Amino acid sequence: KQFTWNNITQPNRNPLLQAGYAGADGLKTGHTKVSKYGFVGSAIQGGDRRIFVVNGLESKAHRRSESLRIMDAAFQQFRIFNLFKSGDKIGSAKVYMGKSETVPLITKTDVKVGLHRVKRPDVTASIRYNDPLPAPIVSGDQVAELIVELDGKTLKTIPLYAGENVPRKSAFARLVAVVVAKIRGE
View (spheres, rainbow, N blue to C red):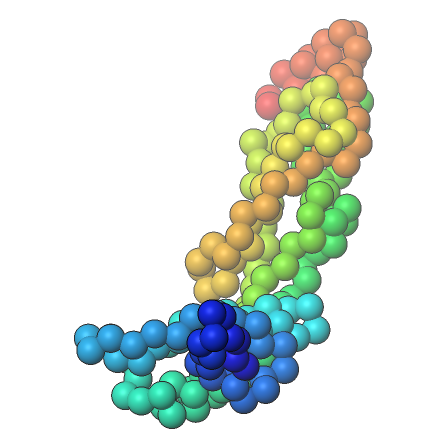
């Protein structure tokens, strides 16, 4: 809550630290005539970090009360939702002239979003790729994207990767596929 250097003791003005807020670890207080009292606050609880900025407050006491109120709301009303885990199959994509008609699409990272707790059901995820993907496809190649949206706004775009190899059809099999497509009018 304070430190001494060169025989001068300085109190820590961080209102979260002063209040003993669980997990508080920063960040910066400030005051100017124009912007008044402000604070950039940071805390971590259960592995989840919250950071906020507040400015324009009339007093140190107001800065303290607002900082505590905002941080409480941040931890109580917002959550980090893990939509997909690294390695999960997210979907599949069509393959053109491959020995398999589709390839599984996987993510190499956890897909997490921070949201107000009541907004989770409104999140949508869609897959975007050039349809169909031309064979051959090598496992681990980026071939698509996962688009995570809320209320029509993109929250995240995550690369998706081929989950397995898809070799190209043999020359004869490709010829047969072209002839069949022509007969069907495709």
